Each structure stands twice: as C-alpha cells, then as structure tokens.
Length: 523
Image 1 (tube, rainbow, N blue to C red):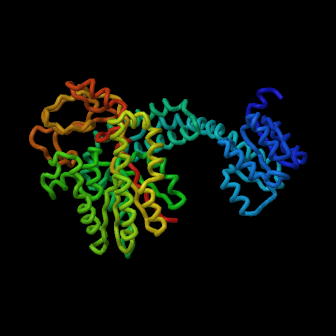
Image 2: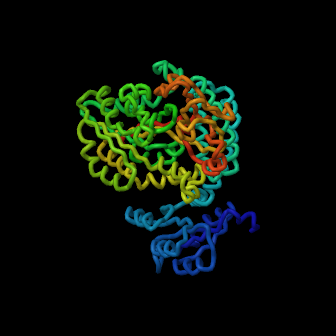
Image 3: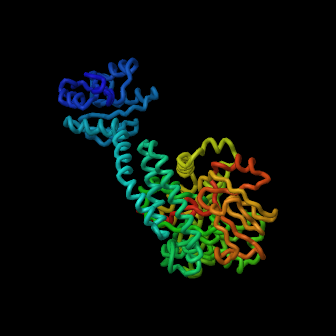
C-alpha cells in the first residue's frame, strides 16, 4: 500500500475472532487506513509497547485478558488515543463500565463493515471533516456577510451581524481552523466601526423615545425579561455576571442546555459601558440622571466601588413596582469563593415562596481588569480565545454555576445576563484634560478636554444626550469608539506600554454594548 493510502491513520483491532472480520478490515484498508489485527489482549499490550497507533478496536469477550482489562491497562499508561469496544454483550452494566473506563465508543456485534467505518471516520477524521466543512461554509457565507455590512442600518442589523461573527469565531476555533482568523478580524473591525457610527448618530434617540425606537436597554432588563417570571407565588433567580462578553456567554451556554431550555435575547448596555451606570440601570430600571435625582451626589462619590452601594434597594423598589409588594427580594454580590460558599448556604431559603433573588458575580470583571495589572494573567488570558477558555474554567467550578443548578433542581427559572462587555483595545488616543477629569481609560468627563483624533471618540457637551447627571458648566463627556483607549501626553509611553492590547470597557463598541439576556427554563 502506498504512503498516500495509509495517511488516514493506523488502527489496531484486538479480537479472538479476527478471521471473521476480514470484510471489515478490507473496507478500512480500501478507505486508506492501515490495520493490524491480534487475537488477544496480551499480544495487543506487547505490540503497543513497540508501535504507535491512532485508534484501537477492542473486543470485550476474549480468552485471557478481558477487553475492559486491556482498556484499563492502556489508559493507565497515559495514552489518550480513541478506543472503541466491540462486543456481543448488550448488558447495560458492561456499557456503563466501558464508559467509566474511558472508552470512546461502543459497538454491539454483529456489526457491518459500514458501521465500523462510520465510527472510525467520526473518531479519526471527524476533526478534519469539521474543519473542512466549517471553512467551506464560512467561505460560502463571506460574500453575504460583506453585503449585509454594506446594507445594515438599524441596531438589530448590526447586533445580528456581530452575533453571527461571534458564532463563526467559536465554530472555526472549535474546528481548528485558524487560517480565517484575519478575515474574521477584518469583518469584526468593519462591524465595530459602523456600529460605533450608528451609536453616535442614534443613541440619544434610543434614550428619549420611550422604547419606540432602538433596542432594549439596561433599564428594560428587569421589566421585560425578569418580571414576567414572577407572580402567583413563583420564585425567580436573576444572575448578573459582571463584564461578560457575548462570546464568553456563548462559550458557557453548552454547560446549561442539559438542565434548561435556553432562550437568548440581545439588548444594549447604556453608555458609558461601566458598572456604575449600566448595572445600576438594570437593578433600578432608571437612567443615571434619574438615579442622581433620587440620591443627589451619588455619582460624585469619587470611587466606582461606592457607585453600586445601593443596588439591593434599587432592585427591591423596582421589583415591588413591577410585581407588587408581596414578592420578597434578596440580593448578594459574590467576589470570592468564601462569599460564594456562604451564599449557596442561604440560596435554598431565597428560592422558596414568592421571591426574586439577584446574584452578582465579579470574577470575569476582576479577571479582565487584572489582565492589565498582572503579567501572569496577561500571559494566561492572551487573547479572546484564552479569555473565553478561562471564563469556562471558572464557570464550571463557580458558585454561579452551582446556584443556577440549584435553581434547576427546584424548578426555578433563571435570567442570566451581564451589565457590559469589554473590547480588546489596540489604538492609543492622546487626550488633553485638566486634573479633575475622570480617570477611566475608555470614557472621561472633564472641562475643556480635547483629543488628537476626533474620529476616535463620541463627544457631547449636553449630559441629557446620554441621560447622565450634570457635572457643571463646560464639562465634556467623551467616550472612546471602537478599540481606542485614552493616554495622557505626559504619560504617553507608560500608558501605551501598559494598556495596549488590554480588554477595557466604558466606551462604544458591540463587544461592550451588545449583550445577552438568557432565559433559562428548567427542563
């Protein structure tokens, strides 16, 4: 057989009836696989010490070593090659034991050559076929995506385009297709630029037209998506994961689909895309200028940590307005494992009776900020893909996941959302401002500010255009567009070196503003 014919992989078939399997092995050979066959487990283990194989087909019922014993022996050596059990036994306990010992698949005899080929193809060629299919389908879709970018006009248009690019990014990554990464980045850059232009032109309309135009906003989240879950003695859980991008949500979503029916809606964060403004708006159903009217001076506190001090009160008042005073409310922030453990001990009581429970989890926000401050985190969370992977690893072991699973066990619906996302920033924008300007890297409020590139910012002088509290005469409100971030002329190199390639938030981009509101209905 020529080298081209054996390139698909080397297979070891272990079966005491190997002579009866000749039609099966011949088909595999014709399809380009190299097949070696032995009649017992001892010979198989001896051969594996000398040869490398890509896959093993392993009979369970053989003289001498049982197939399951051979499976265990192979796994203890650290080999992670695919192993398929091929057996006459239909006993459920045999199946469970094979899976428990990390068999990759299970075939019941008698089996046809085509059935075996199907399993071999899926396990050995599946990744390559998925890679080819994903690449081909994206290439076929590329022209339509370009046309959609040329024609898009509304928030729904741009949010849909951004959402599709997120899905393509995830799918191509899963398929191991990296050659199209630059194409995805280019399309995402076009969407980011045009989306920022849309926000500059129409954001103020969205705020002042009473929901008649534009997307659902932060102020609408509880009323539109959470309040309908309450009433008639029911309980519901609101989970807010601070600074969760749409792609991070889509990466953790598969962990929830066995427990819940998942219905996703997209909404827009308020500006600035920062916790003091967007998360207060979620819990209170109020714009920042309305919150300032209720609590004068709140936004002059000077510390972002203090800006969200009264979320529990905002939430309780908002729920009472929407669902009536008979619904109990509970609110907790979780920023550490100890806080998560304590919260879980109380959660059962929260979810009983007519109650609305809100839980805020800060890990993703801490991770995103920490990446700029710690070289170690920077290396681990190097790009969007790595940030998603870390988010999934955290979520799998988090109190957030356990709280959501507890809600599933109790039949309690969950609304999972976030207050804002983050954008991978690469372009510094020099700003000239007085010392009293706010210190944020993606938005600034201050007197007589100017920048070296006006195209990189959304700048307004009327706080009502953004529904922000007034900050005195001559104040300008500036928000970075796309992937820009502010640097001072006196600390130009320091800020460029420290924050270039960082994940930041507070400005105008789909990564920060187009967010999921996911309704999780227990199965």
